[in-house]
Image (cartoon, rainbow, N blue to C red; front, side, top):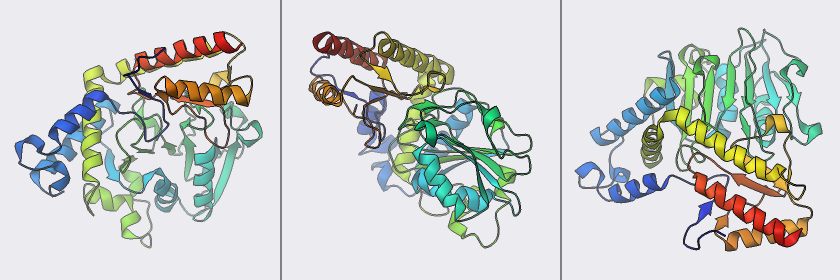
Length: 364
């Protein structure tokens, strides 16, 4: 069983943060960098925050190897605002926006896009309860005469993930990466636009990181409100209005932590180990049953069921008693969900696996 003084947080978001980051933020909270007051109190145009902003952008550019012709922005409104900003800025008249519906978040994005532009769904996982993504060759309505192709790289609810991405020649790929950004290496040049709410792998809730190819920002029509134009925030270096100062600072600390781990290659290796160990335990017997198609299993959100709902309730209750918290599956699907983002240590996954084995021994 887990040590009583050690808590492992499996919540899907806001999610666990690295302890080193929490401790550094705590140490610096009242007096940042010897300026005599908190980073929360400093002007967003002052030297202290401008240094934080630049350092955070530099870290993201270095870790993800973001090309020079892309801008990195720090916006507000969460990923949900991006559901509207994407078609507002990127949709081109007479060219449809293509969407792959792989779960709740793409369903919401499609709903917003349909209010703004001609929208076509090229794939729907609804008939499979969003438990699989399937083969891109089976998608429909794919056309090279499109404004963009939109995907969500990781489905936190059903526990599926894109392990490779579709390519449609001449069509920018847009990806909502809120739940798996910075968890693996990427070729950013394959994407036109990436956005991610910070509250899973990057920091606390309150800031959305946007990475956009600069030429795409020039598509926006004049009638789009100023605040909703990517070009506005590119021109003003994410300071057209007051940015979310503290969340940006925290993203900076998290990216420093990722660098200290050895960068994305090292982080990806650890994430692969965590996911493989947990799925191996799920697959070891029939007592636990993974819900996502094996080829599409997420390495961030591991979803599974037990033989009965009563056993699931008991499992969740006893897990919490052993300081394994946040394991309840999303209310729309039930079951168990272990969110094992970057900051979840291997020891946390090991503690969960040990608990799963002991629970099965007592209840099988």
